[in-house]
Image 1 (cartoon, rainbow, N blue to C red):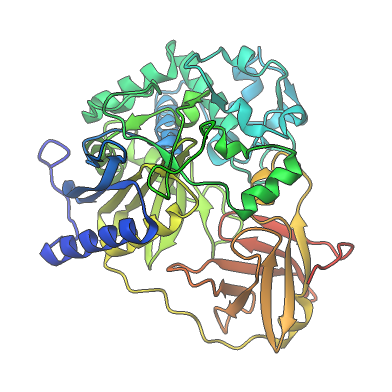
Image 2 (image 1 turned 30 degrees about the vertical axis):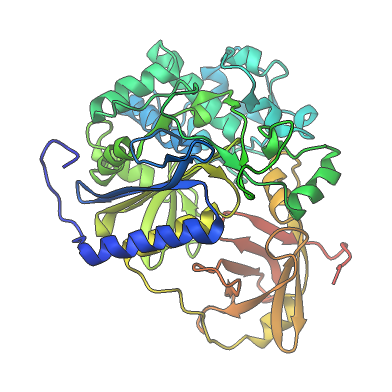
Length: 504
């Protein structure tokens, strides 16, 4: 038991469940030539599955092991969020506190006057992938560092931070927003964020093999990555770079050690509050069990309920975000959680399913875009869920007529960086009485069918991508029932622009 002996109702995990998870992960390692992967499953308050597959270090043939450390990346943000909410429980901070008042020595540009703590917790502060426009051609240079030194926030952002859009009006994932949140928490507590995390999270939960020091460790798995693909090389042309920013940790002589995987170079996360934690499956199981107990021992249960409630939900049919936690329906089960990726070779998944009293942990020592597919199959195996059935509904004639066109994000170079890099503009075409969606780059470049997902809701579609969890999109229509924009399942919103030339 992971909480000192107390037990909660849980979904039974039997021998057949263990065999199914074992078989699924083993197949994934072989199918995708993964270096290694560790998986943990928490049921109720028990760690009922913890296994390593493949290698923690390919060259030395060191086996992967759930007791080995993993750089968990952005899952760190959920822990920092819990610390911030604990301060709110104590009356030392509030969601409506203004960031400019909490950090008066930091320079802000743009509409920063209304930027509040709640915007940092929900990635709606108007902060983009880079702190200023001067950094936009190499945005991750400010995020990663070749040294372990953590400069004061004023030195880390000598030119300040640009608030590109009015806070609360646009969602854009913001590492630098959590750098600010971590600084606010640290100042209130009077100690560095790594000390706050130890005192408020790691210590109380008994996570004795976890820290936020972001240092090489003898029991840390070796990170690997793959050569740049077509889309990453395409982005290079846009940025005028020799290597994409995600490959800042690529060695000078990037040769696969086994025909597939390139040993990464250790680069440090500059703002530790954005992703500096290392942990093991066993310690993360303690963390997951605490989340299933609604943050017991860290925050009040009512506070935790607010963290996992929809705080930014532009469309209730799609993914939403709470206070640091992302909320999503997975294989028919309502869940929340977070992922983490580290340049140089680590991807991590934390998924919590309160109704099933189940949590799934995945540590992979490979930095690659295939991780979402890998983690999805493991979650499906843990939930014992069937494949998602493709819908068979009729396409509304009005939607077929008005949907075709080209769509792009709302203005904002910094807040659009991830969208531009992942898909760019998208185009919808009508072909043979069906709708097809194409992106300028990414998995939908060649086009995917848009399948109507509901007779009662003509604007809801599922993309026929062949994935276990096909993405959903919503066509937003005006009062004349004409399509004006598209919402995607990753909180991305693209708007019709009839002045743009179609490319298909």
